[in-house]
Image 1 (cartoon, rainbow, N blue to C red):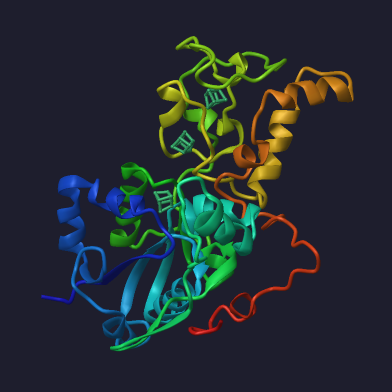
Image 2: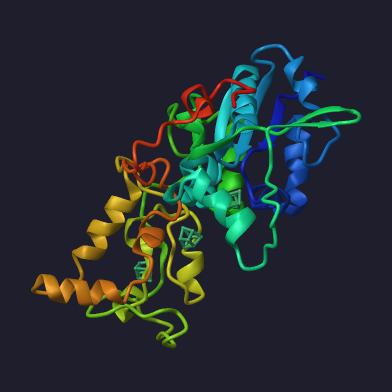
Length: 337
Ligand code: SF4
Ligand code: SF4
Ligand code: SF4
């Protein structure tokens, strides 16, 4: 019997949801196991980094890489898996756009460490103990990966062949990708595997001419179950977000938050969302606009929830001449301080 194609799965800076999503294939996971020889999946099989490092370049046929790149261990594995894999797929919103870990780009590493290790209300740390890159213990020296100031998407670190968005990708999206890989009927290199229509096009809610006078938080109103949520003043990113989830969130009364990312040809998802929402605000003066925006808390978090690192903004501006860390300047360096 011919050798089966070899499959690798890896998580970088990830919540684990994308790994669970693969298991969410249920019995169809057996089709994956039947079609592929799984050679690297640290979450599921006992395998070490050294094992994958020892593989020949290009010996992995497909790698599903989930999670963002936030430290030099993530980057090192991205480079190794790029070298070993014929096809590298950015799996999930974190790998595609930086997503939830990427929201940290609204802060600096110093601000985050200050809050997490010293200032947060549940922390008592009078001795100001915080993680060090290198710690000497009786058994030798322990080393932690360098924590970057700026989270990156996978394609900002290594070339990516395909993108499978979603937080996590829905089962039907994963099935689509598996089918394309098994049959070899893949889209052009660099494409998103999936649909190129908006969530609105899959949404069964009735849309009218939108004119928003104010936004509501989900807990403030009980929306009409048949009408467009945005028409009712509930923020919904479905107007400028790629379909593929069958409008999962609007179907249960929650506005889309944009996890499937922008449609083809849109580079900056947040800017596209901002422009789509701005065009339906019912306001004549700057004061009116301000008043409407006052009702939309955390607009940066709404517009850039999943694609901040991949956007034109990329991160909050550095303050007071703050410099890039050595690890950011040389993302391939495994041990940069
Ligand atoms: S895309 Fe969503 S589910 Fe997947 S790792 Fe990121 S946060 Fe978790
Ligand atoms: S609820 Fe959201 S996804 Fe559905 S039609 Fe309205 S804007 Fe589009
Ligand atoms: S409705 Fe929007 S946020 Fe919800 S799963 Fe679909 S793309 Fe993601």
